[in-house]
Amino acid sequence: MSDSAHDAVVVGYDGSQAARQAAHWAVREAVTRRRRLVIVHAFRWPLTELTQLRTEVVVLSEDPFRDEYQKMVDALVEECRPLMGELEVRGVVITGEPVDVLERMATNANLLVLGSSGRGTVHQVLLGSTSAELVRHANAPVVVVRGTDHPAANRKVVVGVDGSKTSIGAVDFAYDYATRHNAELVAVHAWSDLPLDALGAVREWDVNWEEITEQAKVVLAETLAGHSARYPDVNVRQVVTMSKPVEALLDEAAKADLLVVGSHGRGAVRRMLLGSVSQAILHYAKCPVAVIRSS
Image (cartoon, rainbow, N blue to C red; front, top):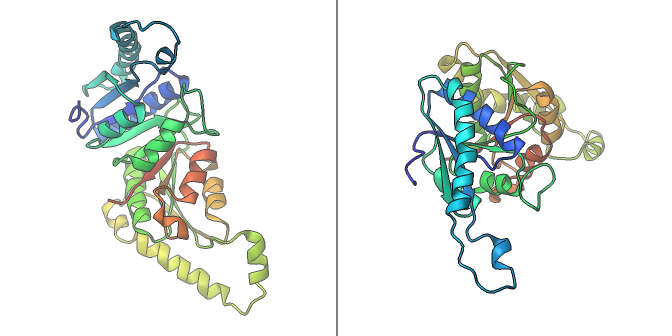
């Protein structure tokens, strides 16, 4: 199955409502991208609960479980097929750890779409553990869908820009989304990583804040340079703010259809696979979030 999702939109599905909403979002994205849709259900075997039973060893077949999972996936495929037009949609059931299976399926995928939480017994706050792992490690762009089961209505996409390589990739992704969905693009550069209370003391220093703000505007303009020619139909609004990045992005994305961030940026946490800003955004954003890793 390693090449079955080549250049397709892949969505992980575990039967939960969050995963179903993610699949519906993935359908609309696959259609505008003109890509196939592959719905993937991964299940562990043998089941952990069975291996922990203190009884005589009983050899169980995975076939009945696989058949039930396949029915579940097939039902969603039939639900999505009318919305796909002539594009292919298929469902696959694969034995293995969900994180490993979906990471492998995403290797050659155009996009990986996930629900914000699933059926696992231990969830992180607002973000499922499988989704949290995949945004750290998957090679493809990852979109975590939360709180939506309807087409994009606000026609607005927000992207975080800090001049880093990953944010350049995020800008590319955001422009592409905006042009396909006829959406306004809001590019946000929150140049300060300091808490606002610390900034209050800093303002007393002999600092030319106008000059610093102008430099921040230059960073934003340089990152966006060239895209206007490639995407002349996209209306762009540039925002430079002294707010903390997380607060600035969440404020702008309050009524957005998508928020796009790099997996890590210019700060000291850039050595991590998932930066503090993108991690916080994933936990608290109310709209779908796309996390882009540098290529």
